[in-house]
Image (cartoon, rainbow, N blue to C red):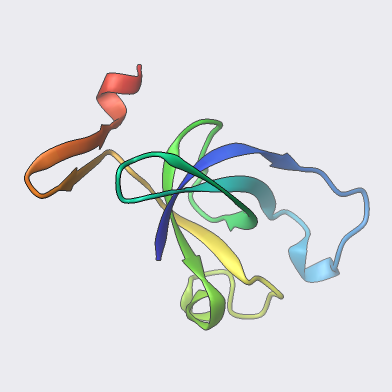
Length: 99
């Protein structure tokens, strides 16, 4: 799993039928210092994440174990909206501070 920030949405007028109703979001990964990396990915949103929220992304074969992803061609899924991140007893991110 990796920490990422929601940067945008992907809208598709036609897609694989099993993806109907699945919201696709563009996420940008966060490094160990809390800085945004240049790496982007599209992930299926399973938790109702919003723009600029920090999220937890499951990637690769583990994604097929996520509820509602088992029969879908999904390689990355947002599985949690992050409230806080602490590293070495130092706060790295707090959703409360972003509001």
